[in-house]
Amino acid sequence: MAAIEIHPIGIISTPYQKAEDMPIQPGGAAETAGVITIDEAYAEGLADIEGFSHIILIYLFHRSRGFDLRVKPFLDDQLRGLFATRAPRRPNPVGLSVVSLVRCEANILHVRNIDVLDGTPLIDLKPYVPSFDAPRVTATGWLEGKQGVEKTLRSDDRFSRPR
Image (cartoon, rainbow, N blue to C red; front, side):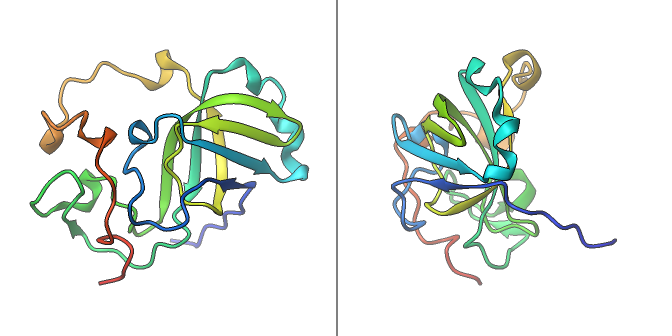
């Protein structure tokens, strides 16, 4: 398969300077403020974004190196298949977060509930639309009964270092 070239469209700024001791999901980052600076070349694409209360951020885990196909996720003590987790060390280190959009000023987005490392390259953003993005869920696999824990659990160094 041919290589795919992706270029960042902006930079995400947050209070989180290191991967350890940060929220493991946006639900654990309640009220954490962040700023997204969109490159001026893409600023026109932000027209109409303020009509949405939430946006989906697609970004690169820029400090992630290597991956394992079996990982011990933050919410469990058993090894799980990588693709059944949200572990940041992946073959293609792409992350996704749904955050609250506070306001847009020119090419600057002010957001809340952000669980991303400072300096993270943004590769795309999309409006969050519940009827598109929130299907009726009937199974959550090994995470059954663990929802809610992510609001207080903090990360450790298990995904910060290559194995």
